[in-house]
Amino acid sequence: MSVDHSAQLAEASRTCPLCHQTDTNLYFEDKRRPYLQCSQCDLVFVPDVFRLEPDEEKAVYDLHENDFDDPGYRRFLSRCLDPVVERINKGDIGLDFGCGPGPVLASMFEEKGWSMAIYDPIYHSDDSVFSRQYNFITSTEVIEHVYEPDIVLKTLIDLLAPQGLLALMTKRVRSKEAFTGWHYKNDVTHVGFYSDATFQWIADQYRLELTFVGADLALLKK
Image 1 (spheres, rainbow, N blue to C red):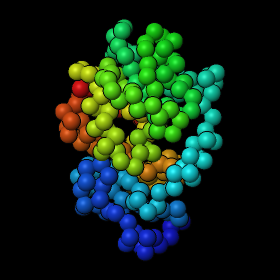
Image 2: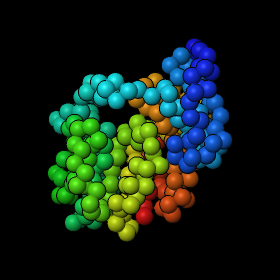
Image 3: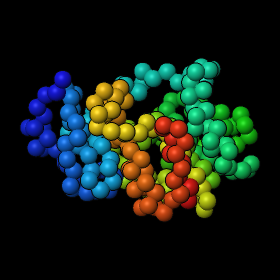
């Protein structure tokens, strides 16, 4: 079911939050909100006027149950952990960005012998982590929540040491037909949706080597 959001869209910024292209078009619309697509980087995004307020957003995050002892959650995170472990060296230092209230992935890396820093703008907001570089950075189910992906991605890439690896885990846009029935868009805290082409644009922009692992992991090597 769709509704007419034209009045709110008229007041919204239609500029792509990733590449700042102003040539964006309506991609899809449902009863909750419209979704625009950028003609340059292919990002599908929710216009700013349809975003939640910070307290509303946090209330949703507080409902998440990321249990250290949940084997299902650990298997899910292993889809990021295992490909990264294959590509890093002993002694490397990592950062888990957007770790949430329970930094399970960082603990899983530490169990395997790697030193980890953690950061989350709501739950672990220690800015001192930005004062050094890292051999690898993980960010699982985070980038789709980010309002300013241009700033966040540049920050993370700048934090990478030479030959460093950035692992971004997020489900990717496949087609408009698939998007129509996609459960991923129904989470109202999800505001940015990345396709293969979007990640290729990011890789080209920052001169990174791009590798896809499965349907939801993009590895970007400096």
